[in-house]
Image 1 (cartoon, one colour):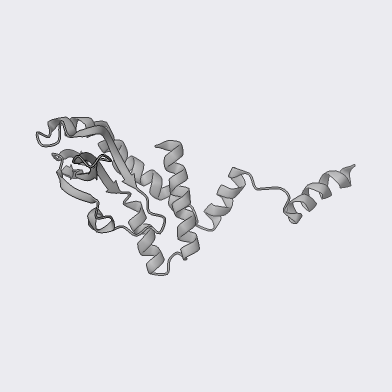
Image 2 (cartoon, helix red, strand yellow):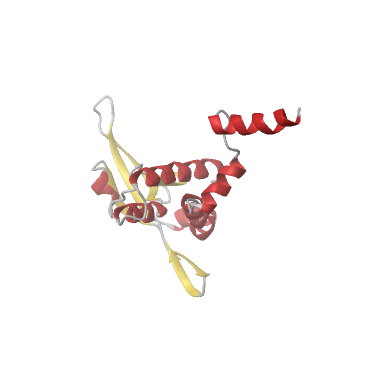
Length: 179
């Protein structure tokens, strides 16, 4: 019985039938410094999203230009699988056009007085199915900036492509669960 209690779990683990628990996986990742995506996602949330999202509706309402054009008062965040982000979103998709910025939101943060946060407003022009004109949709859109870090790390050899892709999947999972 004692031999069975010790040998069967060890044999099951060695054969690979048993999956690691989340705690065991986290422990292994910490030892191998592979928790990069978790740190980037949490930093993005606490250092940026948690600060700007509560004020987004106010920023939209304060804009004379976009107050009535933006119907969905949300921030849309792009997460490209390969982590490559264009400096101008319209370079990635010519259907998307930059239309301006919302008013700045200023806040003291990290020793910086009146740190500025602002959002870009983009529009898409969609032809009507009946051919009777074009509908315009305005929205607040940006890339998830931690992806730029992952892309740069993979370009400079700090991460392999497979590791980068795994980190992106982890960030997406974190955002679905927490944000």
